Length: 176
Image 1 (cartoon, rainbow, N blue to C red):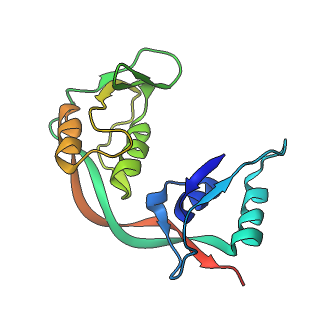
Image 2 (cartoon, one colour):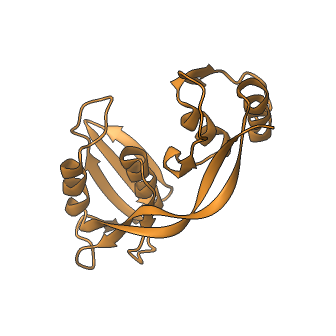
Image 3 (cartoon, rainbow, N blue to C red):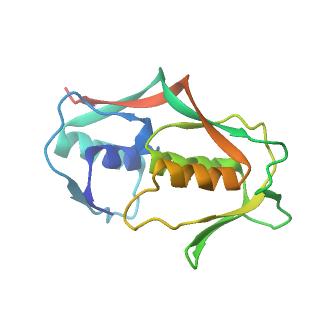
């Protein structure tokens, strides 16, 4: 289900990616969209077909050189990441804190990409599962400002460095 979502958000849901990976078409339809999937077989292909028929857009993946943020360690080992002994990954929201249990850094990357609206690549070299938490002390709805984001990342013993890299991007085109 989606309510009042942008074309980028619709495409991100259909193609199972983060909106920061989307290159929108040169011309977009005005406004936002609502949708509800009610069929028992809610396959991504059916959703993509509906987007093409109803909105007139399709998409394809291309590797492109783009601005990214590189997640790196400040000082190994990162102080805010505890190697997990728990079983099963979980992300929960508890008393204003996002708690990651038995999570790889990929979970953090998705969170960062969502709020920074930019691809974030893991350059830490860390491969374990970790337990860590992030205080969510910014207004809802909204995203953390750069200083808040820097404080969050620094608290984990990590840092974000601007860069350029080749990454898969979803290019949205007007359907023919």
